[in-house]
Image (cartoon, rainbow, N blue to C red; front, side):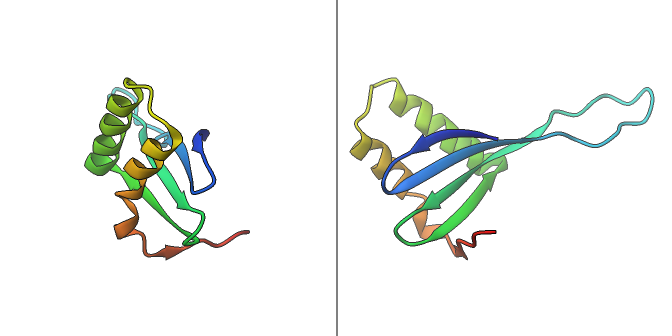
Length: 91
């Protein structure tokens, strides 16, 4: 788990989930990964994985190349809030 972004509005954490044991002679699959995005004001979060996570990563990397402001980053991340339905629960 690695904190990638943290503003007053959002937090983004990257996760890499290793696969379990692999039978002898079987190829070792790539670890699964994804991003958790927390909307601090709405108190909701979402976990992105697979193709959606790759799309998020590609867009974020392209934006980072232009040295964005915090507002630019928040605007990009905010595009993913429409699909947030999971209320944030603290343990």
